[in-house]
Image (cartoon, rainbow over all chains, first blue to last red):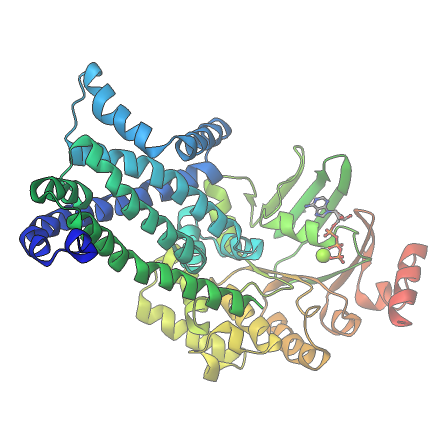
Length: 223
Length: 245
Ligand SMILES: Nc1ncnc2c1ncn2[C@@H]1O[C@H](COP(=O)(O)OP(=O)(O)OP(=O)(O)O)[C@@H](O)[C@H]1O
Ligand SMILES: [Mg+2]
């Protein structure tokens, strides 16, 4: 029995590849939508966390801490299986996107906060002295500088979001992993699983390498 | 009679510590006032209260051109009339020199891009750095950066300019170029309040010198009096220490 025929069977690969591509497409859609929604949510949360009135700041911190503690799989199952009991029935895609966004937003909020806090106080003071409003100061002075600082950790977070999309297969989302397990069952051969793993790596490895490079460059510039 | 900038019973505390212990000060339109005093005497705190970068205690009152310096809508008006130059320049590093000068007129006054650019180039020429307009601040010397900061503040056409030790972070050979710009500015009739350790500048340019110590104004008057013939012991000690340095 040949190990290649078992794990990298060319015939199985050929037959199941279209299924995997469909799954990949859904994985990418889910990943992209959750990343973008998480960025918007995170930016909003970071503003409340930094500049809201005291009770709002407190509640935002509670939100951020809870959603960084809860296992994503648990959250996903609650959204998909528990919410219908209160009449809220979400599709697998929307359930997965909701869970991913809620968690990604919490991490993103902390990343933005750290980025904003890294900007020297003098930048805020110069803006205030010129008469810029708080919103203008953020949009024109602080965020453009903070972006450079937050891009590596945001990319890291995006990688995690894409990886975590695989959890959506437990709520019957036909994503890459789900398609791979189905293809494996159909073909009675594990090759599709190996191919799916290779596809994940092929997409995420370049991003991982990019983050490392940005972090090295950033560290060098700081010196 | 109250001045263009009028300060009444200004108190400011950091926790238990009282940094300003009841300052009364009137500055007339077009007047140039230099504030001197030892480290920790409250000079920075005083001028930072004027555009409310620092909040101050209740019962204190500051007015600029009659407008009370309180949080809310009025504060935006005051800040548009009051320009500030910091010891550490605080230029916006992600914007070019020209964009630094253009930002506030564009955003606060809604000036058109072309008009703001033309104004920026005029101001940069006035402070002697027209040729650097397209560079980023990090590529300029300290003296050039501080002159950009002055141009940036002037772009809002302020009635009052506040300077907090504008030359203290500069290498000695660059101090002169910044003081020259400030001297020109004083001639144009802008009201100036300058915290400085440059006694030469104070004696030549100031209409009035104020000596502060321990959160209070100890002595004030024309430079010929305060710098050359101080009445208070604390002033004499301070000047002695500075001049023999
Ligand atoms: N944020 C702050 N928290 C606590 N104390 C402060 C703060 N800022 C200033 N102080 C204190 O207030 C006093 C006045 O400070 P200020 O910066 O106005 O002095 P200064 O006259 O400008 O001194 P320097 O010549 O060193 O700039 C000092 O004793 C300082 O320690
Ligand atoms: Mg000071």
